[in-house]
Image (tube, rainbow, N blue to C red):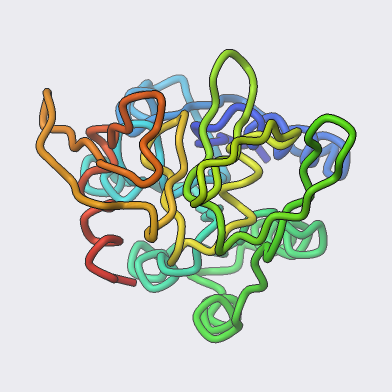
Length: 250
């Protein structure tokens, strides 16, 4: 089977490609895209054919459901996301499975086997599992500060940001620590009801937001506590989801 991977986070893309190559030698990865626009363009090329598409929900320029609005997809689709709130919408576009990140190897195997068997439609059991099963999220992180090891509860974290290949954690009382983890990994470990990734370079806590103002290019700027050393701007493609999240939407 020929596989297209739709994923905008490089580490997640490489991790999935590695898992598929290692465990399913009969699968051949024929393409990788990272945005709605790039994916639609790839699918419209007559020479590009895929039997299976592993599709992340949140992409660089919007959500993957925009792809379905622009083009008919004949391939079997397996949704991959860090959030369970998209499960019903995955059902509506008839995806065959729904994998929550970090992807469990057993779940990945089951999804691939469903594709091999030509299973029609969404895996209803997986849909119900995604909706009903509470996920466990990271409760604390252990960081190093000089010769000390400091435990930090996630409830005390204001935001994370990356700068010059480093990832930083900033607490509500304005302490800053360097972390070994990337924002890609952090976004999968944190409770999406409490934290939101506003851009490639920043994840903010709901409790850190003091106010939000309009910014250039239909973007939004967050006034946060403690005050960041950078402009905390919501990417244009994430503005609608951010406002929905801010209002407490699921």
